[in-house]
Image (cartoon, rainbow, N blue to C red):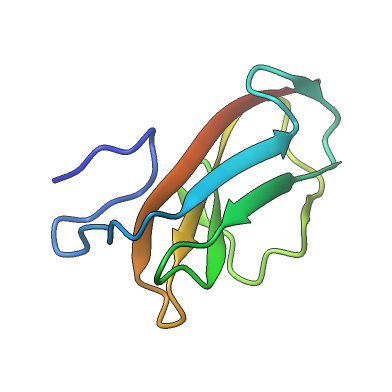
Length: 101
């Protein structure tokens, strides 16, 4: 089983190494944020990445609209992971922790 900065990885779903890179540009790791905030990231697509999957506290945010709204106070982990057109995860991932005030 793999461990990628807190990204959800399952034994049967080993990520694909395709040269992709993900960088969360806003907010930064450790930032204090309001209960609603926009997530900004950059995906450098490798040979297979087509889009990203966003997770909040290890829960997939299907159809993520680009912003989180109404989060509870406290620390939350946000993870962005690259995915193929068939939704298989690639190894490109980044996780940050934010604190909702």
